Image 1: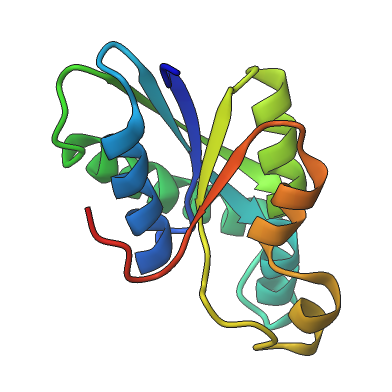
Image 2: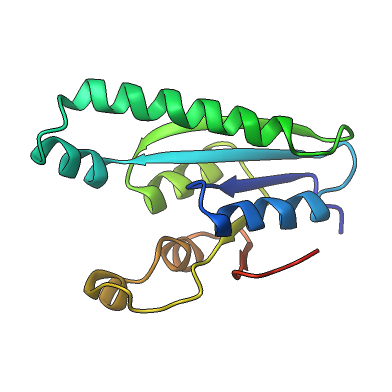
Length: 150
């Protein structure tokens, strides 16, 4: 099986960087890795409720920071035989990951996991983003645990 296109959602955490490393080791020469960052609307609402400005300004700043970090990830990817692209969207992370995977017809999703369950009551009851994606997508998903090494 040749793996030519992989969607790698990232929140810039250590675990999502580990997932990118995994994907880089998995994709075939000539393939593509697409990095996706989702600006979480719940997080933005919390920022606004805490007095950190207006919604549009907060999203604009978060988008600029995300685009810069994605660019750095692409620059440090270390492979010249594959194409790396990125996208920043706004919404619920799991829903946007599912939408982008479907819209762009990805054949595989590689996503990092936190490795700990139940850190919040919401996560205990409803699961993590990775679990929601895994349960809802028809696309194969590889969940990369913390500490994975190539």
